[in-house]
Length: 158
Image 1 (cartoon, rainbow, N blue to C red):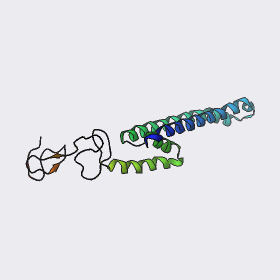
Image 2: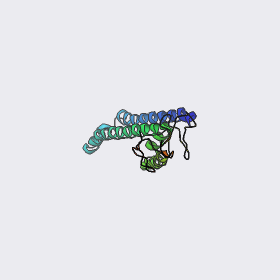
Image 3: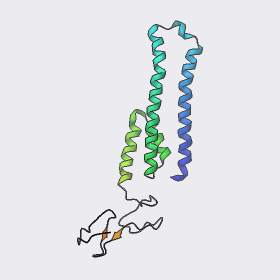
Image 4: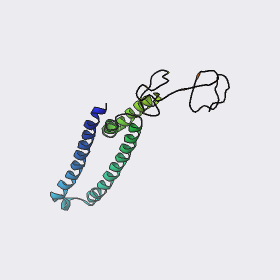
């Protein structure tokens, strides 16, 4: 998935630039046609308020994009692809899809050193060689790093 990261980054940037230019173009076209003189008072107010609403929506999507990008990168997912999906899939469907995939990704056991996805009861990370599990010095059973006491023999763990 790493090899596609630049592709998704380029797609995200291209889609964002296209949409921003489209919004600016619409307002420039309205301004250049001279249609302001023919507009009613309500239409003029709408033309003033719409850009503020658009700026609010752009800021909202930027915040969503930054949060999705950081979270996906932390989980070892393709951050640009998920940012693209979360922002540009219509009606918030992209965010829902991302949250479903995020939940499944978060359930996977990962190496604390290199973030490699581990399978089964690995004792050593096959990617970096980091020792994943510790054994109780008393009974020899596998214990978690954050445990203070071995649940099998009640030995105090260091």
